Length: 312
Ligand code: GAL
Image (cartoon, rainbow, N blue to C red):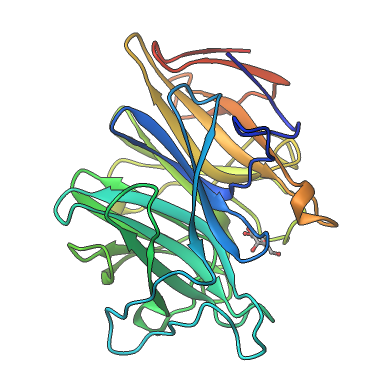
């Protein structure tokens, strides 16, 4: 079944799909797609699919009126700012914590007026598509924390975020319940201003994709490789073209099928003038085996989630 890059994508009810800057989690035989939904009182929406092509709307999992529960001594629990306006909750990522049995979401938080909070926000739920409980926002170890991602490495979960006014990429090991950071486990590419982090593990290597820092305007995607996360990464190298085919990384999707495993770059094609007109692009990633990765631009992508085969 085919997806068409850059077109308006709709859910199985025919409504426009709102899941930008997001993440896909495979759980219980279904893919769950979480992402930004900036409409009305929504923050994060969740869709599910058995085949990665047909998406059914499940729930507005985080909203202005979501239940709130502190887990830390001091964190900002407000889901509206002092002017009664919505805050910004960007780049939501969700993983399932087997130890606690909870679905844990991390995001980038701003107050809705400017980008000076530079905080991380956390929410949690018993089910993949239930009403997430908001646990507030904070600055890990007092650090700035903007564009972010989560990554599960065996039983260790890491939170990556852009720090020091986006100059450096930080990697935090999370505590066992994933509701707080345990330690700062890496500071990568100081002064390189990497944003939109997205990570995948393939054949024992960690592949880290990111953009440069130009707001909604697209720029060159770069990647770096690591044999062990806490040992750091190699050099940043280009993939895709100078605008990443007019997109910015959201996450890397692994399609683990019965015959093969495929890797797909999922990018947001932002519309700087009208956020709601932003689109999605899914581009295959090819790994020739020489330490490089190639992003393939295509108009259509045929995905067979059962076998893991993709073609374009
Ligand atoms: C981008 C960032 C987006 C959003 C945007 C706002 O650089 O990746 O998630 O924050 O800036 O200008």
